[in-house]
Structure formats: C-alpha cells, structure tokens
Image 1 (cartoon, rainbow, N blue to C red):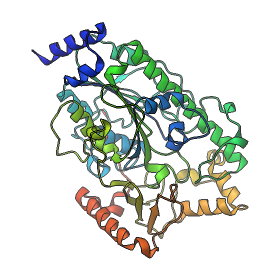
Image 2: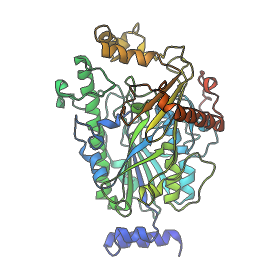
Image 3: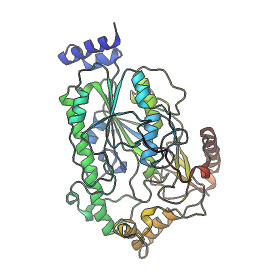
Image 4: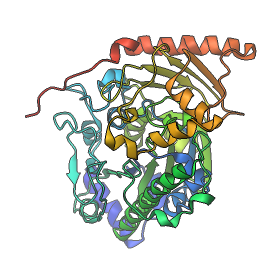
Length: 465
C-alpha cells in the first residue's frame, strides 16, 4: 500500500481510538515533530533546570512528561549562526554563517529539502533567522512575532493551527521560534518579580539596578512559557499532541556578560526537552553531550532515512528513546566578534565535565558596540550599571575585568565550578587532559577548514533580489 494511504488509515484509526499511540509508533509511523525555539534564554532560569525565580509550568511539563537533557550545546552563541546549524546540520565554518547576520553559503541544503525527501511538510512560525530565502525555503506561518527586537510581542496560534490541521496525510515538521527573552526586554509584566528576592545568576552582579533590569528579563521568560503552553494546547485541540515529538530548545545565553557572544557555559549551554509518550518514558534525565548540528540528523533518523554523511551532526535518536546513554564525546564552539565589535575569535571544546577555551587574540580587549557609552542609547542599558558598580565593588570589578580581558587559554572543571569562574589552566593536575583537548580542538578546526583569526573579518552579503 502507498505510504500516504497507509498513514491516512493509521491517522483515522488513531482518531477513532482503534489504534493506541504506542501501537502506531511500534508499527513504524513517522512522528510529527514540533520544535519550539527560545531566543537568548539563560536555561538555568527554567525551573526544571533549577531556576528559582519563576515556575515555568508549561516548559516543565515537557520535562515531567518526557526527557530533560543537561548536556546540549550551541556551537556559536549568536542567533543566525546557531539557527543555521540547526537547519543545516553543519558547523558554522561549513555552512558559511560564521558571523552574526552573515548569509549561509548559496546552495547549502537545509532541513526543508532533507525532510521533504523523507515525506515531511516543513514550516516555520516566528523569528525568521537566518533570513536569506534563497537558501532557507520554509513555508512561513503567521501569528508569532518575527522581529526579535520588537518591543511588542502579541501572538496567536491560528497560523500553526491551520498548518497542523490541514487535510494532508504527510507528517509535519514545524519550528515555532519565539523572540523571548531577546532584548530589549519590553514585554510581559516585570512587577511579578520582587528585585530584592531574586536569585541572581552567579556570573552576574547583584546591584539593585541590575536586579531591576533582571525582572524585565524574567518577564519575557514568563511570556516564553506562555507561548509554549499555547503551542501544546493547539496540538491537543488538533488531536496531535501525543502523535508528535515536541522539542524545546533554549538556543543560547542572554545578552549579559558571560552569556551570549562567549564560549562560556552560560552562553553555549542550551535547554533541550523532548516529549513523545509513544517512545520517551516520562521524567527521564540524560547527560549525553549533543549539539544543535545533531538535530537534523536526528530528524532524518526519526523519519527512517539513511545516515547523511555530508552532515557534521550525528543522530541521537537512541538517546531520546532511552536505548543509549551517550551520543558524542565532545561539543565544539566558536565565536567570531566582527559585525558588532572588534576581531576577537574564540574556540572551545567541552565534554560532560571539562571545557577548554582558546582566545586567539588575548592581547586585545573584547569589545561590543553596546559598551560604547558615548552613545546615548547605551547609557540606558545594563553595561553602565556594571561598570559603575565595578568602581565600588570588587566582585563587580572582577566580572567586568574577566569579560574585557581574557588569557589565551581557559580551562574549567564543571564538577566544582559550573559557572566557569575559576580558570584552572595552570593546574598541573589537569595538564595531560588540557594537552589532549588542545589537540582535539585544533584537529576539529583543521577538519572544518576553520582559519581562526582569518574568519573574524568584516563581510558583505550578496545583494538580495
């Protein structure tokens, strides 16, 4: 029987209750896939990841009813590069978007083509990075904000509802891309949070003014959680929730020192939650190391497709389904600073416990345009709060100093230093491991064609038609 006809019969049986979800999965059905992507999320603020400032009830539901992964990482803590990796299965040096807002190489194959070959219809709602439509041929759905710096962020689910409920027997892959909690942190209700009672991140200053700012960030985390709830409600109303693998991704860290634009843990670590009751046992936790580049190969594997050796990522389907404990040995990351700052290339390698960071231009000072306080707009942000606090407070002085001035190499042991604040590069107890990780990192760069300093230069995108 033709695959689409078979699927139609299965769906009809599911709707009538004649075939339980688990039986459908056992018979090899390709699951629907919904991927909810946050924007600049400090994943440690989610309550299921230990956050104590708010209860993210909808995101937590995915963890309670599915799998929570603790070892997921972005290979670049900027939206365009990491979303290009999500959609292409390639590291930034190979897909071309190795600087923020730099176009992906023309001709790069994406999830839109790969998953169409596996019989899926593919769409995206919300934030549209990367935007070059000659590479990313998504069906773009209405209803969610597209501009990540919008000060207003109302939404509705009518676009995704129509897509999910179409009279089309093919399974679907849907990306719902929030703009929360990306700056300028103007949406939501910050009055929900008492600044004096906040538990501030360990790599953040505790100044009262910073606490006030952080309430606005948390308000957008709340808005993100509300969006997740709306997506789950829509899937339920369409009768597709339990037939769908729902993934939640935290993307990368926030626009605060130590988060976005770094290779430190709060920058590159990402929440990754997965709910699919047919195959994922509820309440599981996995420490397997995975990267955003691994998601496309996993989608292909879930669809029953063959391994695509041209991709950098590797499927972790067996980890999702509890059939395997580990995925990859190392997660790699890079940062190139041009477009909104000076040249300051960074590379890193990490496993589940240790991380080595290589700052390729350590004699330079790290600089982003938001740090220029001669510009009136920047005087209203959080950087002047940090630099002012550093004049009076030794902790703030250290945090500002480590952000601007960095040694060539940093090495951290997450077992006793999860926020990566205590550089152990000179500790002889780690010398052999450091040397091994240096070799591994340089080997990865060579395989990728990563020229290091040579990649952190200004660029010009091709003209758009």
